[in-house]
Length: 113
Length: 251
Length: 133
Image (tube, rainbow over all chains, first blue to last red; front, side, top):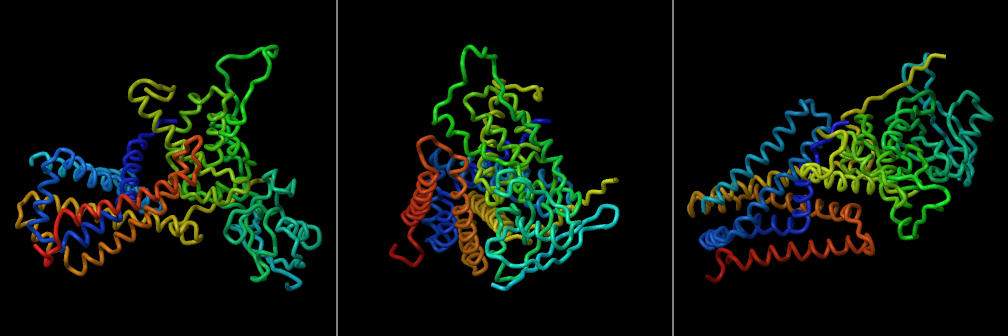
C-alpha cells in the first residue's frame, strides 16, 4: 500500500475550514455588506494600512489562501462523489492548481507593496 | 394497532434471478416483535426458502444486519412497532456488499480489511509468564474501550458512501480497530499499522460523512476513530518528510 | 452449487436516497459559494493594487443586487459550514480531561467572538458612505 499525499491537502483544508468557522460569517458580512457601502477613500486607506504592516500582509494572504484550499478540496472530493465523468487527476490538478496559482498571485501583489 | 403488517423482503436466487426482487409477506402484528422475529415467523410459517443470518438475537453477535427502509439496522434491534403507522416495511441485504442470496451479504471483503490493520497485540519484547500480567489503569483502558465494542456487524460499511463507491477502502470498522490497538497501552504495534492507515485506501478515503457513527448499534463512533487516524497519519507524514518515521512502504 | 453474487454499482444519485446523505451533500455544497467568495476577495485585492479608482469601481460593482444576494447566500453557507464544522471538531480534538461538549462550546464561543471582532474591526476602519465624515 502506497503512502498517500493527501495529508498536505487535508492539512490546508483543515486550516481553511477552521478559519472560515471562526471568522467566516463575520468576514463575508463585512466584505459583502459593509465594504461596498463604505466611503471609498476611507476603505482604500484602510486596506493601505493593513497591507503596510507585515502582519497585515500575512493575515490578508491567509484570509485568501486558506479558504481557497479549503473549498477546492471539498469541490474535488464532491465531484468524485457525484461521479463526475472527468479524469480524476485532471480534477485534482484544476482544483489545487487554481488555488495555488491564485495564492501565488495574491502573495506577489502583497509583497510588491 | 392493525393485526398484520406487510414486510417486503428482497429475494435473490443466484442462477435463477438476474437481480433481487421484492416479495411481500403479511405477518401478524405484535408490539414486541423485532424484524428478526418477523423473519423467523416468515421462515417457520410462510416460506422456508427465505435465507438470512442470525444468532444471538440480542445485538452482540453482529449477524443479522439488514437494510430496513433504506437504513442499515440490526434485525434483532429493530421493532415492527416503529412501522405500525405505515403498515409496511422494506427489508433488503446490507448495501455496498455483494448479495449472496436473499438477505445474505458477502462479507469476505470486510473480513479481509479487518485483517489488513493487524488487529492483534504486538509487543516490542516478549514477557515470560513468570513476570506477571500486563497491567493497565482504568484511565488507560478508557482511552480505547469505546472502540473495542465493535461487533463486526458491517452496518457502518453499508452506511459509508465512500465504501459504496469503491470497496478497496478499508472502511470504518477496520480503521477503528487499528486505533483500538494503537491506543491500547499494552500494545507496541502502532508503527506497524501506519502503512495501512497512510494509504489512500486507509483513512484518506474518508470524507467524514459521519453516517457510520449514526448507524452503529454499539455507539463505537467509527467516524471519530477514522478521523483521529487522519491526525495520526498527518503527523506521521510530517515525521516521514523529516526522515524521523520511515515505514517499509516509504522510499 | 455455483455462486453468482449480485453487485449493484453505486449510482450517481446515491445521496438522494437518505436524509443523512442529503445533509452531507448540503454541507459539502457550501464550498461552492465560498469558493466564489474567495475569488471575490482575490479580485478585490487585485483591484486594490490597480489604485484607488479601480478599487472604488470594484466597491460600486459589489453594490449590485446580484452581488448582495450572492453574499447573503455566502453568509448562509458560511454559517452552515461553521455549525457543522464545530460539531465535528470534538471528534478530532480529543484532549484528556476536557469533555467533547466543552471543546464544542469553546469553539462556538470563539466563533461568535471571532466574527463579531471582524465586523467591529471593519466598522472601526471605515465610515459608511453617507454617514458623518
